Length: 321
Ligand code: ALL
Image (cartoon, rainbow, N blue to C red):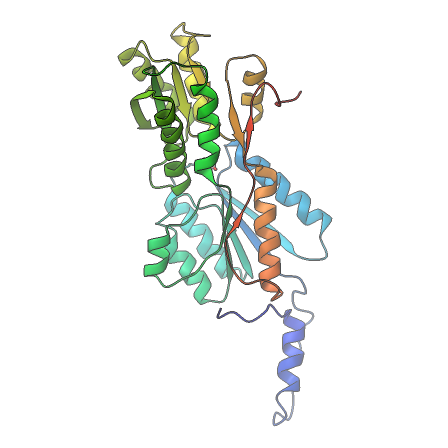
């Protein structure tokens, strides 16, 4: 590890003065420097309830630990706006934050700017969507990942659907953005369950994590595969898009739908029986895990290594009120 433990600025000035015996008149101390580290949380689309919940969880944590750190919360408007997310990282480096906790919109494209952050001594913790291991290795940068096993989570959700179907039944898949590692892992998890149950994936397309795109694609898929029995969506926004297309096609109750995230509207649809299952990856805690970890690394109390967070199956049996 090439990073020195975080030293508050006022203390750093004192240390540099103490170690500088030849200096006759020490530099004037310009008022107290930041005594607490600044941590930037950088998320993806704040239009997605998943990230709104993540931001709320992070803010609540900061308020409860206001003596330990300052928090800057950032997000982008469009799931695909990689350039904006890269610019946010640049801004946070320029603002002099001590740590960045980031859910990258793309597993490869964010690596160069995060390497620049690391080169400047900023602690970086990757949450939610894992950065690409090969690209990190090629850039010679180590960034710890804090997040769930997306493949296992998606498999649990798809097994729930498969238990209601017969071998040979056709299912449709709505994938996330294909350059996202978590989207890829969820697709693999769906495939694991589909294969084990002898089902057939009749079509699988990316709906880019977005509800409206999912609704259009699902409508076209249902037209092309009128005997499909289920739609597996890699997040809840896309599951809601699928639900809209199922309703519009007059197929309510005939197509099983599953998602991933456990957002409010999906919990409601699980209670009403229109969506079968989702996965809860505890959005409110995910950033908090990353922040806690960044604080440990800053204080020199932890070495950067990956940490797995929980992901739980949610169905009508445990969705609650
Ligand atoms: C992923 C999250 C969520 C979310 C999606 C949309 O990284 O894990 O499932 O819905 O981003 O950006």
